[in-house]
Image (cartoon, rainbow, N blue to C red; front, side, top):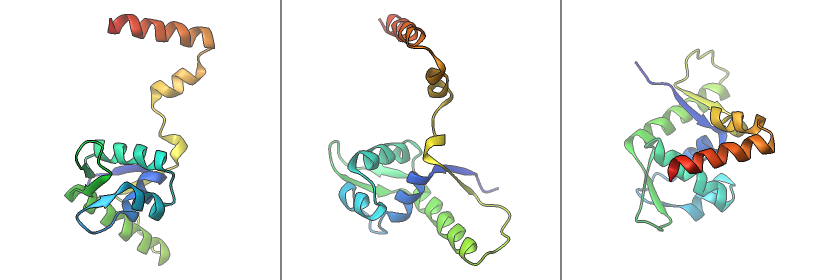
Length: 130
């Protein structure tokens, strides 16, 4: 069975824009994916956590797609072709969600807190770390 991958729009755009060459860099990706350097850094970190890319040396602007990253990008390419052909392809192994839907449940809950409640929650979290 093919796994279901969930990507944000920015993550999908970055995977599509990544070069087929073994080594990519943040600057070229920022230009190709039309993202700011800050966005690219965040997306690169997220894709690395999903094991779709492998980072270079620390503080290096280089990365490469992993085998899993190439597979997901292939699914994205197939999905684009099916959409452009107006196919009735019912299953897509990749679901793309808007960037603003990537907030975690914790972030969503934190947004509902009043400033005093948030301050108390942060104080409690800091106490637990000590």
